[in-house]
Image 1 (cartoon, rainbow, N blue to C red):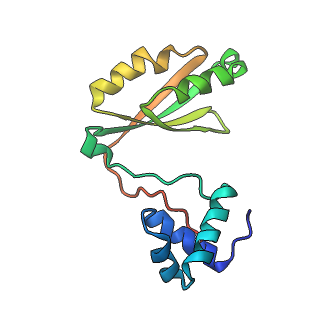
Image 2 (cartoon, rainbow, N blue to C red):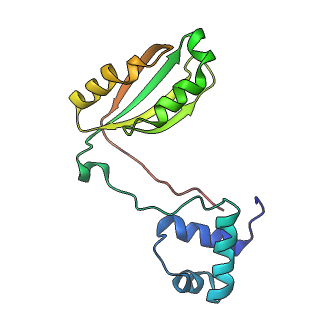
Length: 154
């Protein structure tokens, strides 16, 4: 479902900012009545355009003060076991995002931890222990300039 009409684009922009709004409130903002608005939202969900609705938690408010970006390079043998590596990464709660990259680095991970010591434990006890890992370069983020989950739907 790539062809979105103007109502659907407006609905998606609204939901990305506040998914807790009622269908009636969304309908009012996009100038539709509630029933057709609900049908559009339902269609977007069934088509997989809306993957899920969640609460976004401030990581610092729950004690996760450190954010790390780790670039992981696998050995040639490790690349043969990509499924094993990716499955292990999916099991680590500390890893919020994992991307497969083209180029000299195989993966980019976004990791959160309470502090540097917690990341050090994660690094030595979990991440560096994965089979096939050749190199890990970690960068600690000092501050966050922009962070959004809203896509630029035009």
